[in-house]
Structure formats: structure tokens, C-alpha cells
Length: 377
Image (cartoon, rainbow, N blue to C red; front, side, top):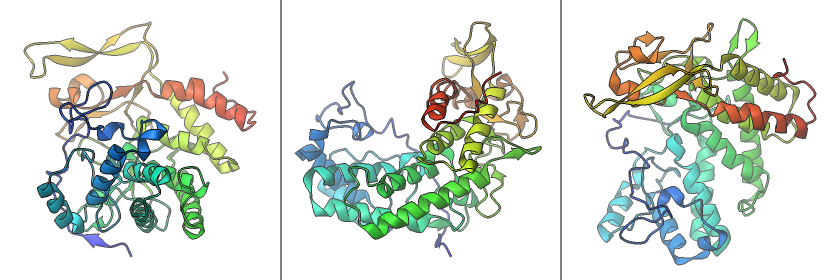
């Protein structure tokens, strides 16, 4: 039985990650010369053995909760005062650890790099504690919730969460551990075996969650029920649907399996075929200047025969029709029908699947010697 905690509001957690710090083009915070957290995993190898890397890693240890995980949307690279450090030590018992928005997996990857470069045992201990957190947080069916410990009055965060790369992020770290990929070679054999088992269970969960319509597999929803595996809504404007963005990461993870089973191959092929079927042509999303509006512009869709293919974020189950929704919770069928705040404050279209179809899929077929090409007309 998973441990439950009372629901808490997200008022203190909605600070955007990118706006937590002000960075110049080199990824350094203006004013104090420190490396920004958003670029901590993008440094050259020699950085991780240096004083600045160790300073940030010690911050990460302070931010780590007693559960073993971390909260989200936090600049863990900023210079901390003694008062800040004291407050963080008092906050360690908070049960707000999450996989959302890159939390926990990012801290784990950073600690692993610093330990690999320095050999400082405190970073290894914190990493191992986080491994145990991920293993404990996994459902018996192989999925991961958005938050763990679970929240007793918040079913949304208890759902199996593909949104924002939550589950795939956890599985990616565990897969690197299981495969003894540097810098994770220091993990003990018992945890390595458990990580491998957890990844396999996760893959089975992914396959079981793939949405089937009229006998044909498609892709995935942002979240799935932790018991039934059925597609679930998230926030009021995120309805049950087939979600293009989240499905990209899932497909790429499945493509990374060294010896894919027939079931994995079928899942990838089916999802690729679905992406190809639902691509939108002849339209382009633009930002139209409009000083009368709060943001000074509007997002509109225009016809453009030269526009590259694009994809909607959400597709209606059964029809593959793009759907949109504002804060009234009512499904609409065009971007223009929802209020300006949601129209401009959310990513409703994107072209990320294009590289999945044109680059990743052909490379995967060649590498795995898969003859069938679902994109061949």
C-alpha cells in the first residue's frame, strides 16, 4: 500500500523553472557568476570536479526531502544564505517530492556526475537514497504517479503520469543505472537488478496503457488511471485525449530498447502510424500583434499551403479531431473558440513529431533491422 499524505495546494509550487533565475547566454546567473540550475547538466566534464559543482551539489543535498526525492520548479544552484540553509533543513520532512517538470531525475543525474568526478561519499549516499525513492514510488502495475508519497485528496497527482516526462524521466535514470552506464557505475548490484526489473515493469505498463481505438493501437494520454490504466483528464483544460507531445517521449524511450520484443515493435509502429495519420497540413499558427489584448498579441491559425506539417496537442478519442479547452472545461474544436488567456498561455500546436517520423523512425528501423515501414505509402 502506498503512503498517502493530505492534499496541499500548489500555490507554492507554480513558480516557473525558467523564471527562477536570470541567465545570460553562457548559462551563468547575472550578478554573482554562478552556474544556473537549468544548465547544470550541460557543462563540460571537468566542471563537475570543481568547487562550483560541489557547492551546487551541496545545495541539492539540502533541498532533498527525507523521502529521497525533490520538489519541482526550484533554482537549486542559487547561492544560499545561512538563513536559507536553516530553512531547508527544517523543510526536509515535507512530503512534496515529485517527478513533475524534471524534478528528482534532474537532481539524481547531477549528483551522479559530481560523485563520479569527485568521489565525495555524501553525494553517493544522496543518490542511492533517491534510487530507493524511485523504486518505492513505482506502482505494482509498473507506472509512476506524479507525486510520491501519494496525496489522499488529489487523485490527479496519483494517476500514472506521462505528462512533462515524469514517468519516462524516472525510467530513463533507472535504465542508465541498470545498464551500468557512466556515471552510474557506482550503484550496487542489488539496486541495479531492481532498477532493471522496475524498467521492465514500466515498459509493460506503457504497452498496457497504449490507447486502442476500434482494434488499432494509437498513442497515449497525458495521464492514465493508476488502477484501470484508462485515459484520464488532468487539469480542467486537459481532457481525456490522445496526446501528441507526451507520446513522443514514450516512443523514443521504446526505440531505445536494445532488443525490442514483438510487442514493443508493434507499439512503436502503431504510434508512428498514428502520428502520420493525424498530422495537420496547410495551416500555420502565428502570433498576431494586437495592442488591445493583455499580452499585446493573439495566437491565430492561418491557411498556408507551404507550411510544414504540425500536430495538435490533444486529439479526440475515436475521431482524431484536434480539441481545445479553456478554463470553463468545455471542449472546443478550434483555437479561436477558447479564451485569450488559455489560447496564448498554453502550447496547443507543435511540430516536434516531424523529427520523430523523418529521422528517429528510419534510424530505429535500420538499427533494429525492422523491415516493415508503416510510413511507406
